[in-house]
Image 1 (cartoon, helix red, strand yellow):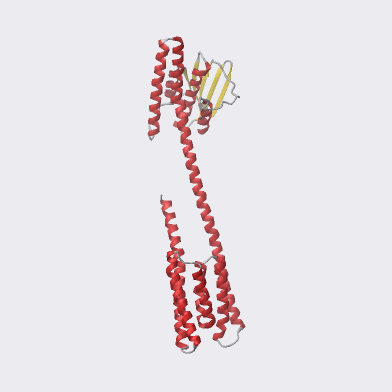
Image 2 (tube, one colour):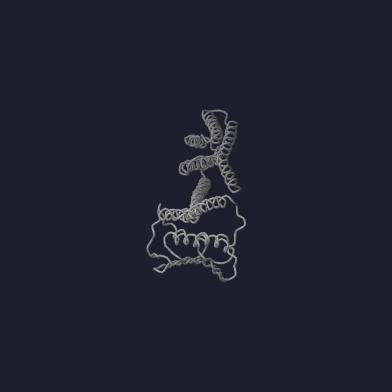
Length: 385
């Protein structure tokens, strides 16, 4: 929020500067033109040329004041600064003492017009001043002419180079801002996608597994008429409801105490009647890695229950020095692990979600299956990272 406020303030300051610079330079031109005109009127009080100079000086002053007023509202048309430049050039040509007007004129043109018209008009004004200034001395002085001309052209060149560099810098800044906006949008999309994947994985490994198990038992009860199986189906549905409520609670909570890995695996194994074996003393595992192991075991147990037709299913957790491994073994019907399973509305998401979960926490997943059964092993590094 602080960075955004600074950016907005910086942009506002830049816009104010863009309006103030041409307004101040136009006001300076009006002041210089007024002083030069009054000075000319003081020393040249007769003749038609006097009337022309006073009229041109007044026109330059009024036009410069108009530009200063309009440019603050950002409604000045390009022809107005060009007309101001033309009037100033004529004034300087008629009254050499007004050559000082060229200095603020150059600034006005380069703050109110694009580079090319501003440079051309400024060059004409500098040439007019270089021609007129030697007339003040009453002698032909090529050095004075060349000095004024070169000095004016150097100033114009410096302004053009500065404007070009500033334009390039502004273009780079705009590109960086656009790139940052695209990056932020991309990060938001990635975050939203990761959240959707997390929720979908949680639903698959909890509610979907429990409901699928209940459906499997209900179909078996329907075929056999065994009330015991029907009771198991109702228990599985109650488990699905509990899983759904627990999922909502976890998504709504900020965190808290997490059950030990062995307790979570014991609860998962008990739901499907699988045995649990713990090897080694428990070691510290981060909550995210523990969750990945539990959900992988839960998914493997669900697959063994519904698809493998296994008679024996065992869960083993091995606490090593560097990693913790959870293995689910069954003696049921195996499958070809090399055959890609296409995920869709009817299922097929389990193996993909398993791999995604374990990969996300820096672990490894190994699946082996043949006619003698299936072995699913998930390993994650120890530690809290």
